[in-house]
Amino acid sequence: MIEKNIKSPMKKYALLSLIISILITLALILIAVYILQKFKIIPIEFRSIIFGIIITIGGVALTILISRFINKKMSFLIGKQTANSLTFMVQLLGYVITAIIFFSYIGIGFSEALAAGGFTGLILGLASQTVLSNIFGGIAILASNPFKIGDRVTITTWQYGLTIPSYPPKFWSNDYLIPGYTGEIVKISLMYTTLLTDEKLYLKIPNNVMIQAAVILHGVLDSRMVRTKYEVPKSLEPETVISEIKKALEGKEFLKSSPEVRVLDTTFTTYILVIEALCKGEYEEPPRSEIIKITMKVVKNLVENQEKNKNQSNEHRGNVK
Image 1 (tube, rainbow, N blue to C red):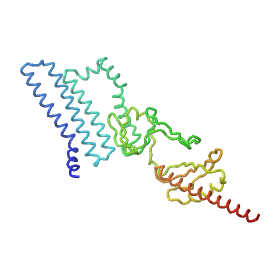
Image 2: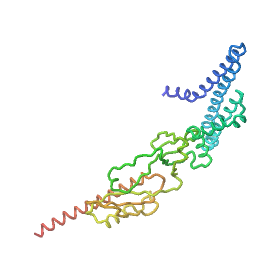
Image 3: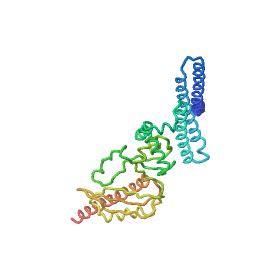
């Protein structure tokens, strides 16, 4: 416990210590380069390039420090969504300003660079590549706002498709599953959107994939339709089973309305019932579990009563004889 408490503040200030160390190192390098140039040990042109690179590294480090501070410290004051958007803009502006300073320092005017066809072509070419397409995807996500921090969503996209299981009784059922990842949106950065899945795993999806994905928003409504299937032996009359299941489900706390029960399909020895119920909440599994347990109990009681009546009938015939 003591070791854990000692490591906690060390982890808390690790990023700040790292960035301060980088800035101090860069400052020492700048002083060293300046002295070497003063004594004409290195040429002036080489000094400008070194200074430009060092300023770029310092600008990137400062941008990371400010964005991390906003994301971690200000989210309690202005909200997670606002803090995330502000962090995104600080990162974008910080990197752009650092690039402008770099080009200016090495003697390339930004307006001149944009006027040059080669530079413009380079920018357009890079924009079609993965890095900038992720940045543009992040900007599009913040602008269109298809989801926000804290939303529980299902992300389905052809880039990360999942295999639909075909375990019994899925092979005879038309119950389709949505291939995708479900969880809570926790961060939208320049490159990635971070999803905390229902399995409590952090999943980072590139923004250029997210902007193409179909997003299912959970929790928008206070209810959802739960569809459950159950296999019943053909020895039981469907009307009786349906009536008993409805009676057993009537008035249950998790239901918002009376469920619909009907025969969906049949096999050689059984028929398949489908139970559709509008249930409270956004999660499907808890209500489905209760419906299955209630249905199992109903079917078990009906089978046992059927066997009991059959045995009594056989005993009666034996007595008559």
